[in-house]
Amino acid sequence: MQTSKDSQNQTPQADTTHTNASQSNASQKDTTESSALTIESLIDAQVAFMQQWLYKQSEPLSREAWQWFGEQPLHKYVSRDHLQYLINDWILSQPMSEIMRTDIRDILHAVIYHPVNDNVPLSELVDDTQVEMLANYVGSHEQQRNVLIHTLVGNETFADLLTQTLYHAINDFMETTLDKAGGVGKLMKLGRSSFEKATNRNLDEKLQAYLNRNIKDLARRAEANAQEHLSNEEVARLLITGWARIKEQPVSHIQTYLRDEPDDSSIEHIEASIQQSYNRLRLSPYVHSLVAAGIDTWYANHQTDSMATIAASLYVDAEAMSQFSTALLPIVHDALNSAWFEAHTREMLQAFYDQPTIKNGLTLNDQ
Image (tube, rainbow, N blue to C red; front, side, top):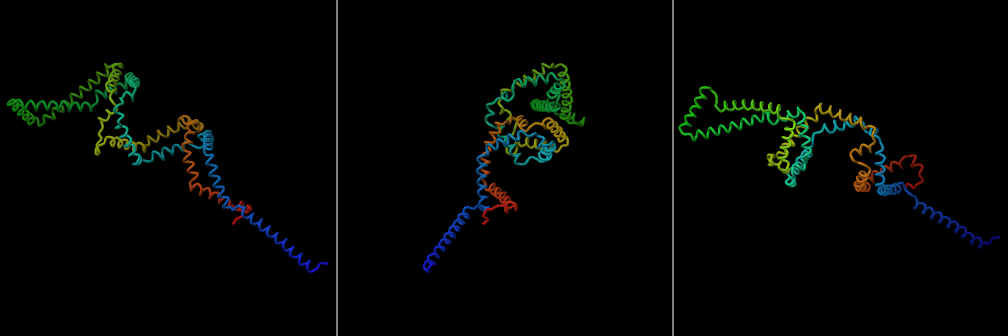
């Protein structure tokens, strides 16, 4: 039989055992709670991992992406209608922006007035063999040869210019002669006045009309004679001789034909003229028809080509893409480390874990 003392001794033993077990369970619970992942902490860990992993793998991923893309055929992603839209509805429908026009003027000015032009002859830009080929081509084709002769000899603008030059020369000679002729000069002036009153016509106008009529007739005769008697070789030699006279002049010689004043800039006039022509042509049905024909022809030739084949025609090969990817890596790295990438990645993962099928199946501590 147990005594009262024994009973007292056993009771504390039972309590102690229970207390130790409770403390052990509590300790295990604390350890479990401290080691359990919340959804938020899991997302934080995943975002950090994805940024680090993509950062390290960005270079090989870019190479593999280009390799995959290069194997795809053009027609899989780009249609003829896409190209038509790109050129007609996007490029041609938009006028040049003022920023672009300013850049064009500034670049033209920098190129035309660059000091290096003073030391570079025209022959460095155009090879003698090119001029010879052009001269022989023009000389051997009757239509082109006649156009050239007409431009040089039979041009009406040239005839008008020559008429004005001769008129001013004759008029200056007459005025100078009459002033020095004394009484005879006065008599000649009187005769001129009498002639104008009798004919009701100005002698200057009569002289200009006479010169214009006869010089144009002479120019037409000269053109006909030149077209009849100038041989192919002579025309070619004329062009080559003209080139030989100017080919050693520096490129800067072009500047003598331009003005570079703040209120009278030839470059601004040239750019404005180009802009005016571009705005007229880019909306022309004629140009749109030619663009459509060009796109149809190109697309028919290349629609089954791979992207790599098309890129290779522009000298963009695997090595070039590798260099391009390497140059872009700093941008990729900065993007991966940016706040917006982290925010979007976090938002994507949050949406993933918020799905009922995922959220209810997780045993994570949701506190």
